[in-house]
Amino acid sequence: MLPEKKQKRIDPTLSFHLMKFAILDYQKSSSELTENEYRRTYQLACEEMLLHQLILSSEEACCVVVPDPVLQRALLTIISEYPDEMDFRTSLQENGLRFTEYLTALCNDLRVEAVLTQVASTVQSVDPFEILHYFRSHQESFMHPEQRSADHILIFSDPSSETLTNQAMEQATAIRRSLCRNPEVFSSVAKRYSRCSSGTNGGDLGTIKAGELCEELDRVLFTLNAGEISPVIESSAGFHLLYCRKIHHAKRMSFSEASSRIFSILLKKKQLAACRAWLQALVQPI
Image (tube, rainbow, N blue to C red; front, top):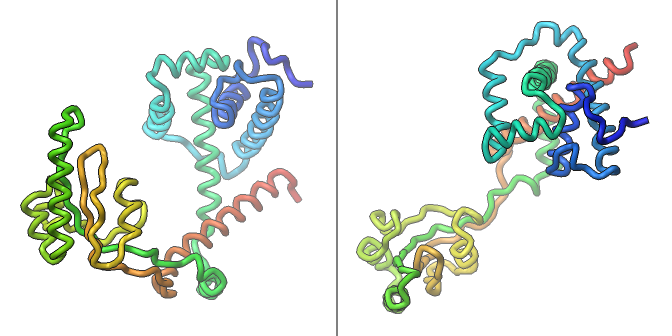
């Protein structure tokens, strides 16, 4: 039977895993879980705790030590996810853990990670024929996305002043009207009027992939034809104009371009398989 959810003290290592799964899956302390949530979390915590105990009792784990600076960095990273350290310590209390108990359990958690990393590192190579086969079987996954070469002009506005905002809008509209008649002078106009840092370089934003600009600009840029000036675009920074100089259409990567990425994909798969096989041998020794 499962222990009662409101039980005052359980094994600190189990409490650590309960806390981890409760926060990961439900963003709650274990004491705040519903009965069904607690049962599921308790089962997961027990399974992980037993597996970790098995790993830490293995030959591979006997010489694995977590240096104190590594432990402290991991602890600080976890604490940084809370509003402050007091909230973290309150969470420990809510999950039935003392700070020293948490630190010991965290150290063991890091030892488990180190052991699995050590096991995974026994696999370091991938057959070149496997890389080639993967490339031929997944060519649709290896594409250079469409990109745009673009220039940009920003006219600042003051949201607190309707008059200044209207003046900025009028200036941006007048600049656009002039540029539509003669787009080739976009660079010189950007140098003169743009308040964007790109203005000193004639507004040149370089080659842009979708998602690299703010949402308002990104949405418009990827609807423009080559050589087209955008409508005036408003954002919290002011009013913008974009000039799409060139469209670089999506194209497939060559094998040489994709091979290093494929190597990483296949190496991770092989390392994961090595870890699974090692764990299986621990759980069910021959």
